[in-house]
Amino acid sequence: MRLRRTILAASIAIALALGGSGQRSAPAPAAATAARLTDQQFWQLIDEFSEPGGFFRSENLVSNEDTFQYVIPRLQAAIKPGGVYVGVGPDQNYTYIAALAPRIAFIPDVRRGNLHVHLMYKALFELSADRAEFLARLFGRRKPAGVGAGLTPAALFDAIDDATFGRDRAAYDDNLKAILAQLEQRRGTPLSNEDRSGIGYVYAQFYSGGPHLTYSSNGVGRTRYPTFRELQLATDGTGVARGYLATEDAFRRVKAMHQQNLIIPLVGNFAGPRALRAIAAWTRDHGTVVTTFYTSNVEQYLFQDGLWNAFAANVATMPVDDTSTFIRSCFNTCASPAGSRAVTLLDSIPSLLRDFQQGKVNGYWDVLSHSR
Image 1 (cartoon, helix red, strand yellow):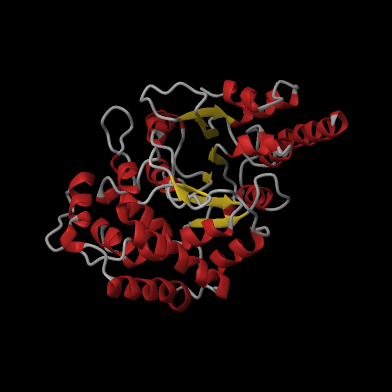
Image 2: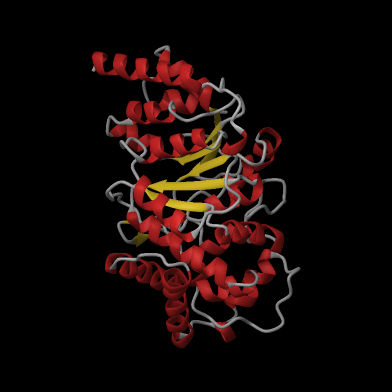
């Protein structure tokens, strides 16, 4: 174990020397980040960067982190727009993307089911003119008439959740066909039968659960977790709603990135051999840096499986600067001012890598203690 750790620390030291610490040469003029990706480039990145799918005990169709907006004001003060965003899990990533305005976003997750979630969302964003149409499509309903663009999130969900506009099997069937047609016919996405079935499964869960769909573990929903609606009505702790469905402007920012093929879901283990290193190489080749890496609480499981050191070695290949930040979640063991089970923490990527190289990071609690 000591030899393995020495080798990993040495690889991190080499990566830091090559640019992982923020010391990087000026990019060539031709290396600017793409303004958009073609449909072929989009799927090529998914195909080439992804690894074989793995297993996780939770489907994670909906987040279980109800205070994740709390850190957004501090992130906006520290993170410059236009970098590379990396994140894990479902649609909470869109809130961070809307707030931080990255040039491109990669969403690697060990489950291929998460790829299906984001492909479904991609199609629905592209098909929907506004928040009301998006939510109606997401839950297999007809868009209610007279819903204005200026509605608060609560008023918007009240309109969508009204019994008059409840589940509609014909709308569900039409929307599922439209999702697959958007991906396959308009975008030329080479979906396999497994992918079509996976997207259909995800959409069926949103249809049956509606706005009250919650996070589940082994297929069992837990009432102590927030619903989709509650997550979208959440604020940053000061009363400011920063969710991607809080305003039409936030919705349109995410919609535009989907239309430009700049939100790229991947299948990959954080400690795996390909996904994170491919993101790092792409970032370096395009003369930019990873500004934000949202890990949720994946690192907890990496430590449990003895894989966190390999994850750190992968991160060390990423071009970063002094502002590059981890966003991570702590469950049950960190004090929350809101009384939540989940607390969102921020951490300096280059600082954590340096401390790991110096032998100061040996367990999950060290990572949490390093956060703020």
